Length: 540
Ligand code: DQQ
Image 1 (cartoon, rainbow, N blue to C red):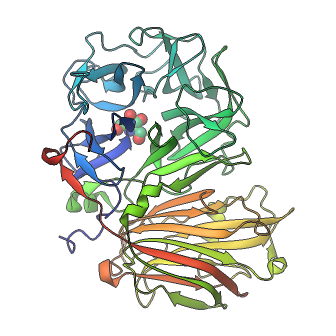
Image 2 (image 1 turned 90 degrees about the vertical axis):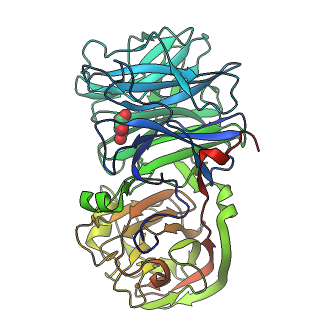
Image 3 (image 1 turned 120 degrees about the vertical axis):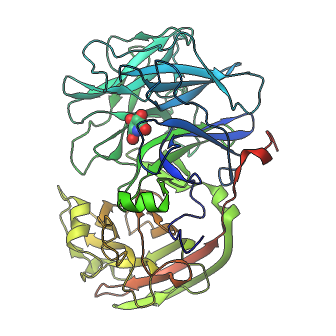
């Protein structure tokens, strides 16, 4: 199977076959993690009929696929069950809100509850007889009204939920409110709208603590919290940090979107339609994103599957309050196999150094760099500069003073194939500029593959903070975390030669000045267990 399927992953969530896209609200409920996700049960491409597939886990690592949760059956969802969310009502249980494509091909919002509430592992869901409970309001097109979020409670005791939309040339989060979680009324104004974006898909709205990495339930309020407003548009997942005023049901961002590369994104590579959930069991907020394919649709049909979920990330507000930080959840350690590591290794200009002794096709590697003579860095004025363009113009073969240095992932022995994830360090207007690139231009000898290069600035001060890079490498996906999670770049690669044992992991320095690896740790990754429902029980 391995030969025919060199791109299937070992520790990223993916169904056995067919098409997967966005998450529909992951949740933790009665000791079990649930994932609902958009799925096409009929083929490897996005389908005219989309459903909610359902998988469960005790550890977010090993999964069991259950029966599908929601399939088109009624006039209000007969043409698809699209994205949505689940809310756990205190003292009751989970309620799903989802977008149905109705018999008139309009997007309407519907509700579903577990067939029997006493079931600790809700697998069968009953659709509300009153569905649809929300239909496109005046001024909103039937194809611009979707993806309800998890709902939250305000001090006035009413529930709120937002729906992604676009109208009057504004991307927006339309707000609905309810006293009984059955009858919903559109609020007079959107929770937030902006002329700077297109249609908002898969919005998400949640509190983040200003002084801890702990998560908080969606309804939490107070001085110690800011609120994140996230929306998917323009092929990326963007977010704002701001203040939520529940009395007026208004969201006031610290800064609006600018429609430039300055806008904050969860991930500066491939990462879309993401959802977070508050993991009450471990008191953390977890982010899941959909990572689609970069190969051709013919390839997708040939390999019989398309779409991965990112590895689950713990997400919190940086102590600066200016951005979010993300990091693979600690359960990844359950998959750590053989470890290799070393300290204090000098990398002279032009050096390449293979990390031996690990399975380079499925590996978790973290490397910390030190620059002895930082003041030698070349100058760059970053104002108005798009880091992705900078990385595209100066790829891993273009020598700078400090950089490019970093990893060559999924590399052949002779480096004819490799994906370069690297840094360049510049002196800026005040302090230093750290550029992080993920260069897919030489990732494969195959053509018909999207080899777009991605880039991001990493907001760290190399005089005080480590220049660190962590990459989760898993056959055809590489998730890279710069500056301990301050900049994330996910890419998809399809090597022709560098597969399985032919893949190598190399550290390189193509800059004219030497750098030092102050530490490197790499773990071979074991394979997560994906099973089918017959052998899953509720609480272990
Ligand atoms: N995919 C879903 C929609 C959502 C979009 C349909 C985001 O509900 O807006 O599969 O990729």
